[in-house]
Every structure is written in C-alpha cells, then in structure tokens.
Image (tube, rainbow, N blue to C red):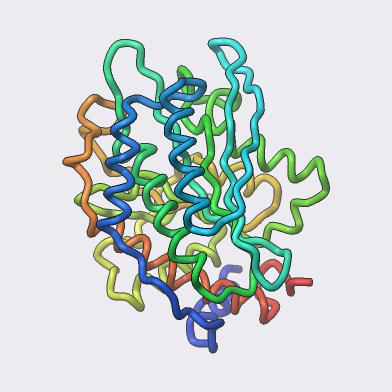
Length: 302
C-alpha cells in the first residue's frame, strides 16, 4: 500500500516549487561550527559546558535572523532529575503550519573518559546552524522550526524512559496543548558528518517522506551516500511518529569503531559529508512544501 505515497513524493519533485533562491549551504562553514562546539568539550545534558554550547547556538541563530526560544524542562533520569533545555528557532513563513528540522546537541555522559562527540551531537548541531542561515534568506510558504534537542542520549542504558528526553518533551507538549496538527512533517539528522557517509533508509520513518528525501539525493547525484538498504534506529523522530506526525531520520549509523568512544573527534568528519546532507535538505524542503500545498500526504494545509 505504499504505491500512492511514493507516486505523490516523486511527483512533488517534478512540480513547480516555491522560490528557492538564497544562500547556498556551506559544508565548510558547518564544519567550523562543529569545531566551535567540540571546543567546549564534553556536553552531556545538565552540564555547564552544554549551557555554554547552548549560548553559542542561540547567538548564532539570532544572528541568522531566527526567532529563538528555549524550552526548559526537568527530566527524570536514572541519575535523578536533570534540567534540560530544547532550543527552538522559528523562521516564520506565509502560513502558521510548520516543518521541523532537528537534531540533538548534547553528548553522551561517560564518567571514565573524555567524549567530545564530534559526529554524535556535534555534526547535527553544526549542520542545523548552517541550515538555519540558508533557510532564513530563502522564500518559504511554511514556517520552519529548527530544533536542537537536549537529552537525546541515554544517561545510562537506552530504554523507553532513558533517552530522547527533549524530543519526547516537545512532542508531548504539542499534544497536550492541542498543537500537534500544526506540525506537518519532521526531519531529524544525527551523525551525518562521517567522512565515509552511508545513510540508509530508517525502517520506521514515514515512507513517503523518506522517498522524498531519497528523490532529492538521486536528483543531486548523491546515490552513493543515500543507500536503499534499511535499518531500524530509535531517535528523536520517534516521539513525533508516535504522535501521528510524518517523520523521517537521516543517520549514518555505520560509525564503528568510533561511536561512543574517545575517538569521536573532529578529524573523523568531512565538510563534504555535511555539504551532501545540507544540499539534499535544501532541495527536498521546497518539494515537501509543494507536496503539502497540493494536498499530498498529511492532507492539505489549512
């Protein structure tokens, strides 16, 4: 029963799009932002180093012209309550319905070694900062939320209650406030800076939205980096899927032997990888807007 969504997604790539003129994505600039974040050191949820990173993120988002708000909350973790803060940058469009592009900015807590998370936490943050700069100066019909989730990493071991704290909090608050319908689509990026970029289709993600992203990758000639194999990964897109919001994850989970080790450092990343993902997003988002405006998956925007 995937045939109709696939046809709609492919058709969106061929339809006239909203204007896309504006600054191009700069992979080298995105990597420089990752370097700045890594310079703060380990950035686990609740730490002063993460607070410093957050101040930098907020400053850069405001410099790009975004409306920025912080969403503080207290998460109940295996190590007790920890104060966490989501950062939400809003780029207003012609209508209030929103498209969310997000990723996490925290790093996993390791008491026995120094973990700076260049790829796992750093790459998504650097890419989102550069994406906000590009999107802020482009025509858009929908409002964009660029979201930096706190507490994606499990404090100890991943479970239904330990991990994705920030995305669970935001999705839950939207549902409690009756605002979930305002969010038309969610795209989450995580670990996308690896020099050997291999992004596979995440099995639980909304099929038509994944097809749309892969269609842009194909159109731009990036099939070598966007593979048609599948894998299942629970990440910050999961709470939005559970809330009934179309959501997709872009992740390169083939990051051994560096994942969650002291070796997840800046030298493992490439500006080219960040460039590829940034270009795909900037190509896919106007197609997504066109699809939604034409009454595609998710129904017509009101």
